[in-house]
Length: 172
Image 1 (tube, helix red, strand yellow):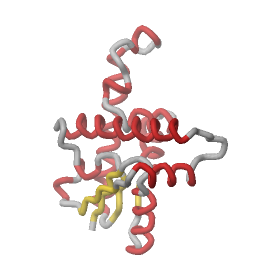
Image 2 (cartoon, one colour):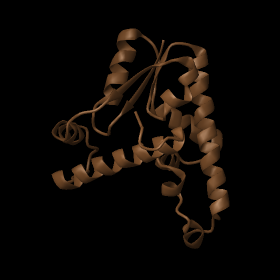
Image 3 (cartoon, helix red, strand yellow):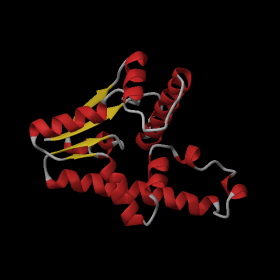
């Protein structure tokens, strides 16, 4: 059984995946995918994490060549290499057998495997509460700042999904 979990930021999708993994006694993959891509491609994990949930234009606006020594062409090549590596890793997990994969458009990548796909969402108050409870040490965002962050992350996830799926407007 292959289970994919897409989720809104702060909704508890990651926790659901880990709990299902424990109950079903099958592996669950989430941030491990980022680590593997970083190792395979020789990039920093934070960089991989940053670009893996953004569409190409959001990750590298057309003016990137003016701000950095990297040309837009090489930036594009990096993003494509990361996406290809992510696709390979996710597909390899599915080929190995039963697993749970959180995020990363795994339901799209694995559509030929007919995964059991779950989308986890929650109301804003619940997401805020979860984010406050799970905030990293030293993160002291106000409720307004945290709500803005939740909306921004979810907006980027939708854009990334639209870009990856090649479908606008129909994201889940």
